[in-house]
Length: 188
Ligand code: SF4
Image (cartoon, rainbow, N blue to C red; front, side, top):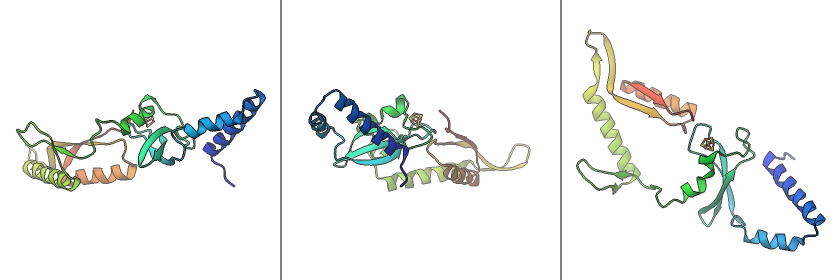
């Protein structure tokens, strides 16, 4: 049977705890009663990825009743071995924050109000704006008459949460539109 590092740590931790408590004469009933009150009791474990930087540490979300009740580092993930930095450690408060934006918000030109929009509405709007800006600014030649086929007025910034394959597809799409100013936030 293959035992993961996480499972090994859990078994080792439970064994060491039992030996230590027994040698101290502590009644295991007390421990069990305490365990029943833990907020992760009965929760489902879901492995996910920290969104804050390109290290992409894995973390475990404990989900109960459709709500994330706790998060912790994933010791089974070989890159970070369960460690999370200060940003990743605040995952739970970010997930459940009242300030978290869950639907696209749109502010029309000259308006002072944000309006909630559907994802399909927002994607169509963005596609229209990108296409129009590209078409209005596309140049086939530069001031010296050399063929350039490019758009200088647009810029693309990639995300650290993109895989190599996604980044490759996005760069090809940008190049196909003539966008030459491209950068990528793949660093801490
Ligand atoms: S290093 Fe910190 S911010 Fe980056 S993925 Fe890991 S926990 Fe998240």
